[in-house]
Length: 164
Length: 284
Image 1 (tube, each protein chain N blue to C red):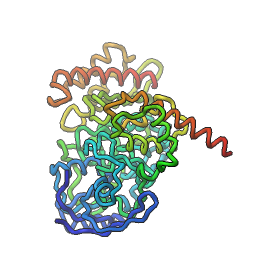
Image 2 (tube, one colour; image 1 turned 180 degrees about the vertical axis):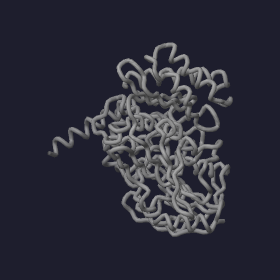
Image 3 (cartoon, rainbow over the protein chains, first blue to last red; image 1 turned 90 degrees about the vertical axis):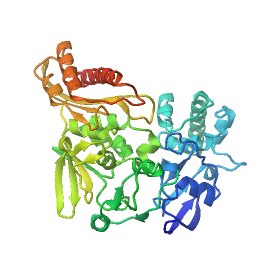
């Protein structure tokens, strides 16, 4: 056992403090220590994107970040995006457009898509495919994921216009 | 996949990094984005008793586009390279190459310094930096020194950087003419089966200079002066392309792996270089 270090982080707006070995991977911190089980472990080799979270404003794969690197960080997971009564527009769109089948990749997909739409609020299909290239889905063939993200973008842009 | 235990450090300045490297010798490693090192540590192919995270070290970031050269701080991420419009104007090959590295999440963490310093023959930036004749700044116990990218790589993971040195910046002379970074990969996130970095200048219908470097076709990047020379003075016609490809073929030394046998890689290298030269020439 290595020496533990004192870690602080904000996860979905909530302050967390604990002792952990620096080698702990962020995905395990979230899932096993903090019981935030939305981000999944797919490949654990930084390929599949099921573990995608937002770390200090950027999409990252939580299987390839040590908890020590995330000391002091702000983290958002799928749990921080919507609630069962008030879904995020991306969650609604994935539901309506059949953007998932087994659902295993979905938390990573949606968490990544939130950042994609922040960076590019009105993406083309090609831009969606390129921007989502770090997330693998083995069920849908991606067609409905792309449709869902397009629909969510339109919905979010319309809501923004209505608010202005 | 749980890596071996390590002591973790997050120094605020280079002096702090150097002190740790002095104290712990080759038991210590610096880490930038960690997307090469962490996977190796998870597989326990790399053991790092003392891990020095560079994320808080002052002075390692920033993209500066000057009148004759570009300076990239070692901690500049691939995402920052892609997003920097001044850089895309001054050296568009950097964005073209960075867009072909891994995927958005990995590019958010992966840095130019880590990519060039690691010495992995699969990384794209080493060959690119050889094409552009970049210079790496290394800071060690006795101060700073500059090493040309073309002199930096000895073998896979073996570079001119000493264990107690840190690569802090990459300086690139402003490239001229047309560019192309052409990469064949099996899928998103894979290393190149073959990749070529090409920068060409022309006057009228004639090529005046050409720089060519190849990726993942040997245990180091391959800067191929002869391939560039084969284009100079020509109209980059079929004969010149054939000569450049032949010169490149003589310089590479691919090995068989899950991307294919040697003959296939040699074939792909020829196709990729041809495409890269044609695209660079069309932009020159």
